[in-house]
Image (tube, rainbow, N blue to C red; front, side, top):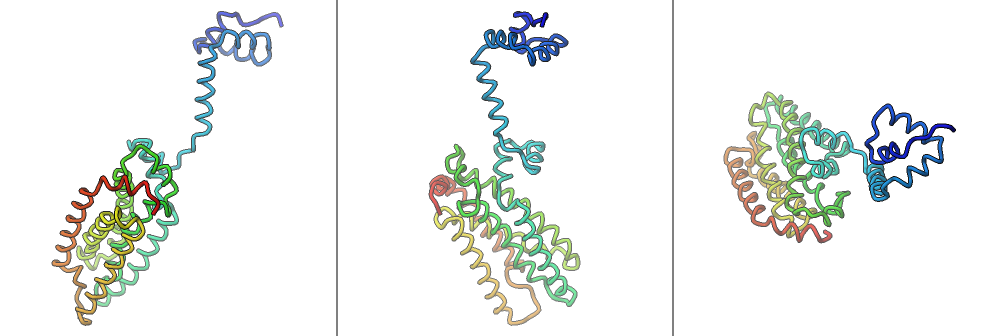
Length: 279
């Protein structure tokens, strides 16, 4: 081969400063010329070369971003926060499908009740439990695939919990809201699930540092079921809403939600200790 890339051009090539069309000629020539490749190896900076290989390895090993993560990043969410949200178990299709199925069944049953002059009791009873269950499934070692990473990550446990909670509430409350639109005959009273849902979720979160991410929501959900059963007994078969869905009941739910949110704020530092133990 009579032509070779000059040493000066090879140095510029190694620094990434060689411009086209000389760059294209050098690329083509280096693939078939061992002599020029040897000169290039001598004039290249080994530290920069190793750094380039490290960047390439990191890029190849990096996990591919899913659709949800890409959408969150495009919406302005920080990359690490988007990764935490994308790994939230309740944002997967299996959980969302289960929520939609529950809502459809409860709306269908409640729709028959409304047509008969009754109240959508089943829907109002189940809807507050969905955000509580979603938060319970999004935090802790039971179902969270990133729990071990979260334990060692330099992130406040309370902040991690709030990120996941906001994601769960946005999705579940949005689905509940859409389901409410399927009960137009009941008017604004079909939104009577909202305050109880917030109260149950806030209470479950406030109890998590002491009882754990499984027991706390379970006890709160059981207490809600017991309250509804007691309210059903007290109304003695009358065709009236259950007590939690009356004006007074909504007021109590708002007070409970506010008190639980205040307690959750006071106990926020305990989530770092809670985050580090297996529950």
